[in-house]
Amino acid sequence: MDDSIIMNNNNDDDDDNNTIEHSDEIVSDIISLIHSTTHSSYVICSQLSSKLISYLSQIHMNDNQWHDLEKAVERFDQSIDHPDLRRFRQLIETISICSNDCEERNYTLGRDANTLFESICQLQELLQSHVNLHCTLLSKLIEQQDIQLRLIDVMNLTGMNVGNQIHGILCDIVHLLCQINRTFSVTNVIDHPIVSNCIRIIQTSINSICSTEIFSGDNAKPTVIFALRLLTDLLLTNESFPVHVYGQLSNCVFLKSIFDLIENSGEDNELILTAVKFILSFNLRFDYPHENPIMLTLLAVNEQISCRELIERLILLFNRSVDPIECKTTNSIIKFFSDLFGDQATTSDALLYNSDRSLIVEIISRELSDRSITDEATTTYLSLLELILRSQSITSETCTRIDELQTSFRAHLYAENCLKQNRFIINEILRQHCWLSTNDMPFYL
Image 1 (cartoon, one colour):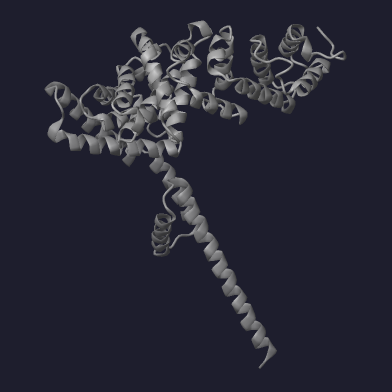
Image 2 (cartoon, one colour):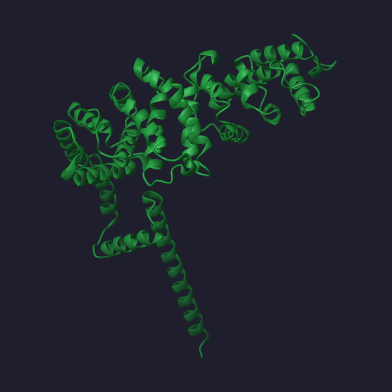
């Protein structure tokens, strides 16, 4: 056989293989793009990609037309007649009518129940998809007065006899609205009765279930999670609540029910973390531990609830340098521990074991060693350490990180760029706790 023919056949095979590989790569990229955007199963993404490719193969596009298609997508997204905008209006109008109908009749929805439930679920799904995609399409629409009036009707349903499951979904809808439009929580929600309704919904859901089988019910768990998330949203706005709402949030019975929830939810991480985030966000509201209802309640219920789950969760988050609140100005975990030790150590003595204190000091020591001397976060760690040492709960006999702490102190005191506040705190620690000082430490520099 002619050698040239053999070579040509080999080249053809290589071209075919390259074509197949390139096609596989393109299809894989398309499926991955669809999946990353929609979070659908890969089977659905594959079917969708097949339909798209089939459609595109039936039309003949040149390079300029592809560019025009991109502009067409932009026009579609910016259209005032966008299908999602129409759908949003239709859904809140339907829910508003059901809400007003229910309020007028003053009894359970009856035949309207299915319509209400389906509309609320569809609205929740629509809003969740926009939040997942960080889409702001609905933001300006939410600011329109006629829409806000409809949304007030939607929120009013949380105070009506529409069922525990619907109450939970409504709380999630308002939470999602606050995510899409950040001003909505301040302008429409924080002064609305939905806040008081959230508190009632949480207490009712917790109290209605036996503590030995807590959250075995189908609807109780998501309802409590949704209500707590909404309250956390509102707390983090740092806006003032109505006086009666503040009293409800600060009520010892309500806070005790949250602590009960944390301690008795087994291995339900989502539920526990949601409750912990609520506690941390509420705790940020108080400057003085002796006026802080969270600290006062923890102390009051100490003999009834151990709060070990709460403390262990917080220490775990602290050890991982994770602040679930992600507050820009304050580390909520450090703030919580500072409040525990700030009230003449009364609360920390009641809640913490010696091993807890030692572990917290070990974490602080590691953070001081790992962080730059100019890192402003070191000030909060040093302040917490000073509070712990002031409580006399850690001594030279019980501290397992003396050498590491002394090394960190020495590094800060000798550094010319040491933060002034850090230098002051370290000198104050050394002045009160001589066992942490060494002869080569420069005092009061």
